[in-house]
Length: 79
Image (tube, rainbow, N blue to C red; front, side, top):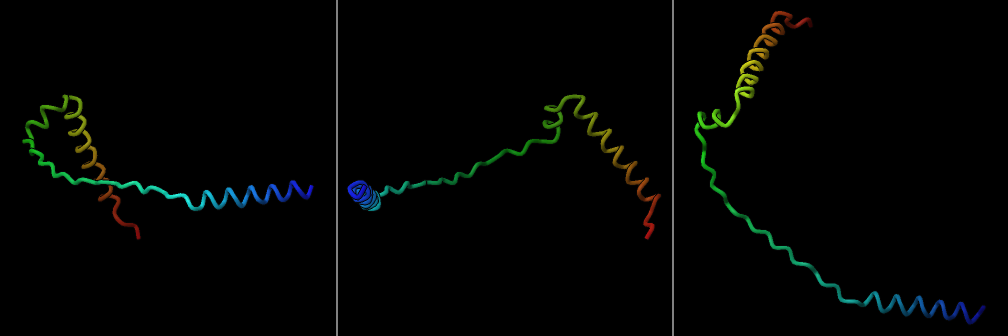
């Protein structure tokens, strides 16, 4: 039993001393910043990319939002 505990302690001390002195390599991170110039598309070109459903949905959404705002104004502030 005494021999086993001495062997275990020597093993722990030996492994700790070998692993603690190891050189660690640091990884170098290189970050590049690149400026990208983006061409501004004309509003007509954007509309052409959208389908008829998207354009109609935007118009309906705008109209519904206006009606909701009118109803909110009618209700007013009750405080």
